[in-house]
Each structure stands twice: as structure tokens, then as C-alpha cells.
Length: 409
Image 1: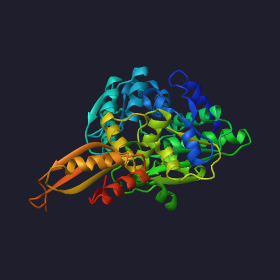
Image 2: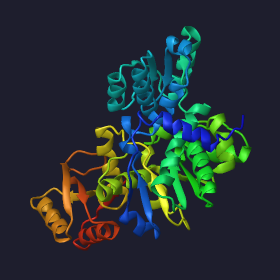
Image 3: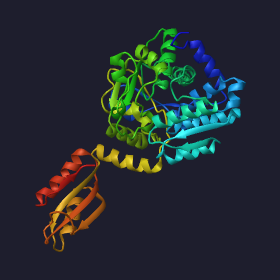
Image 4: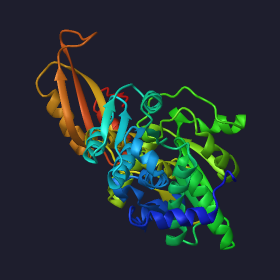
């Protein structure tokens, strides 16, 4: 059997999933089009059932199980999106499901997974640990392990998204989407390339990884999947230390380019999607938009960014928005040493108001390392309109004789 699924396989999967998944909307983004200098479309897979594309692969994988396999139940490991997909698909088919999730998993994803009837086991610090525990559970109990990305049926199920992309936008030139283990981009690349060839067209596929978890570039260099040491990233949905063997065989042949983005880029992407597109997207789901904002996508023609998931913890969203504002130069924290005498706080407030900035939070203290008895520290969180306005605000304070110190985010 060919490593690359055929167009017929993707079409069959799409038919079998018709009653399970939603055909999510594709909408233009004027703001991103202006930034890129080419038309940008957004594929709103964050509006998919369970809030991400993962239901596609999970539901198709479970639909292919035999009656004997279904009787043994299924087990999976996930930070949230695959967990929800497996739990919902298992519930619909009447299959018992056990899901291993790492400690610290976002609460909405945990509650949703339990809400779909799965038994959730919280253990381990990473998805890799949860996956090992799930594999051990499978060996011990006979439950069928539903891998989040390293299985041909998973790739085929995720690839049904690729058929929708070209159905929604047959003239698209470039598709940009995130990569974790590789199941989504492998399926989308295979389906899009096959359908485009049938239409006599070519489409570029650009994958995006968080720079703190970018296992695909070194794997491509090595010619095979390799392990890397990951670092913390807000994009937990693509925090994978090694791409899957099954999707990697497709990625190395069909994905045209792989780029990386920082957490600052991801935060800015979430912010612009909130403000301009009025949609809520999780960090991993905003990877394609982050690449556009970071200038990693060029000469792209009509470009589609896949918003692959929208399951973000409200508390994380609050932090990410603040971080995104800071990364965009619209939010700064400054520390100002002041003599301890009346009127200093009022004077600083007047100057910031004159500069047209807005104080969000203030802390005034006489206690701190290195402070003289006659000194105080004023720490302010200030909202501005952008980098130039931030610098104007700081210059206004300096010209008045104050010495503002910018505090890193």
C-alpha cells in the first residue's frame, strides 16, 4: 500500500464522516490580506465539533475498527483536542474510552473530554508521558490505542479538511497550517495536491512549528523522524518532540516548506484574530496566521491559513492577550524611581495622560532592594497605540526629568 493515501480514500472518508463533522466556513481577512499583500482566507476549523480538526481523524479511525476491537474499548493520550475527538466518536459508537491526559491540561479540554463520557486519567507532565501510559494500558487491557497522529486512518481522516479547502476556494495558491506530530499537514498536503492535480493546478503547502518544539526541520535534514528536546511553549497543541513515522513519509515528499514562529508571534496572531476576525483561536490553531505576521510567508498568491483549533483556557487567553499587546508594542510596564514627596505620582499621571496613553495598573512602594530611605518606586502598566506611541510616552516622561525603566514582559 502506498504511503500516500489516494484521492479515492480521502473521498470515501469524507462521505463516512458527513454525519459526524461540520463543513466549517472559509472567510476572507482584509487585515491579513493588507499585511501579506495578497488575498488571505481563514479556514475556521476552530468552529468544528469539539473545537478542532481532531474529530476528523479520531472518528474515521474508530469507524474502521472491527466489532471485536470495539468490544475491547479504546485508549488515547492527548493534551485535549485529540482527547475530545476520541471521546465524542467513542460515545457515538458506544465504545468505552479511556483518555490519559497530562497534569496541567487546560480545564475546558478536561471537562469537555469527561463530558463526552470518557474516563480520564490525569498523570505525567507531558503528552509523551501520557502516550507511554496509554500504550502500557493498551498492552495490559487489550484496549485499542488510538494514536493522535501516527496512523494511516488518522492521516486520511484529517485529510478530509484538504478536500474542503479546495471546495471552498478552488483558486487557492498556498495553504499554511501548524505542525505537531504531522497528521493534519500530511493528510491536507496529500488531499490538496491530489485534488489540485486533478484540476490541473499546483498548491503550495507551508507547515508552521513553534520554535520551541520544532522537530520537523531536523527530521527533514536527517531524512527520518528524530527526537528533539522541547522547551515550554504556549502552543501545547503542537508541542511534540518527534514527528510520526507515517505522516513524516508524506511530509518529506509533499510539504513545500516548514517555518517556525515564536510565542510572541503566536500571541500577536491570537490578538489580531480576536480584534479583526472576531474569532477565538488557541495558540496552536493560530500558527498559520503567526507565520504570516512574522513575514515567514512570501510570494504566496491567494493564501489560506487554517485555524485548526479554538480550545483555549480563558485564563490563558487573558495572559496571551496581555502578552500579545506587549509584543505588538501596545502594552508596556515601566518602573520609575521617584523622590518620596507629595505630588510625584500625580505629575507622572498627568504626563502619561498628556502623551495620550492610559494607565491600566499602578504599584507605588517604598520597599525594594537598593532603595534609599527618601526614594520610592512607581511601577505602571500602560496601554498605548503601538511602538511609536510607546516611545513617545517614554520620551514625554524623560523630558520632564523622570527616568522610566522598561520592564520586560
